[in-house]
Length: 240
Ligand SMILES: NC(=O)c1ccc[n+]([C@@H]2O[C@H](COP(=O)([O-])OP(=O)(O)OC[C@H]3O[C@@H](n4cnc5c(N)ncnc54)[C@H](OP(=O)(O)O)[C@@H]3O)[C@@H](O)[C@H]2O)c1
Image 1 (cartoon, rainbow, N blue to C red):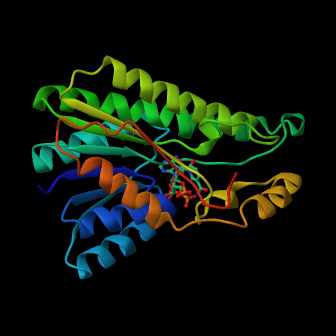
Image 2: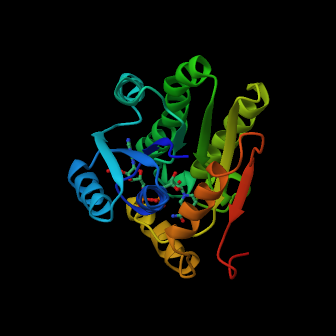
């Protein structure tokens, strides 16, 4: 069945790969992110391949904007089947670097953005009696390393919020956490701290394609309604 799937942070990396994969599977994808030019290019490529994609500028750290994103899709299509809360930033640094603005940005995007997504879609899911939340957390939701304190903190929070959501929902609403290891994307570009940047160059040397994550999300949403895939951890075989 073709589903209406909203994807936040769909302008690159995992969000883009997920959009392409789900569109190829026949779903209608709605891509949100701040870089509208990138979204437009991706949608054009999806449509050239025979898929259907809509795009909208979206800042997940703006509560009203996230609510409007979901409401507009609902008005247009009459339902929302899946929300992939994927947008995230990872400006790693040691705490003693005191990059407090970057800590705040991670909290705004990775935690507040996720909560705003849940708040925006949940009333629609309840009204229509179905829905599927997919949170893109991280291996950082399961482990902390020097420089990842705040990033991991936001991902532990994303994991906990999503698990709490799962426990509170009735069986009409499914909840999945996807926790990737190192994946090729633009994520490490947001690191400004020179030490953390250098450390990540080695750490991220073995990475897998974002298509692997798109495939995992396609698997989770493709299950029958009585099957709830709760978490998938996917990492490069060389990553420990
Ligand atoms: N790559 C990895 O190794 C890895 C591992 C584990 C988890 N993850 C998680 O995977 C998710 C996707 O990251 P990625 O690896 O694909 O990195 P990426 O290529 O940097 O993609 C991040 C996406 O988030 C969007 N974004 C950032 N701030 C936003 C905001 N305020 N509002 C809306 N969108 C925003 C970006 O779009 P705009 O800049 O256009 O807004 C972009 O589309 C993140 O949650 C990340 O933590 C990645």
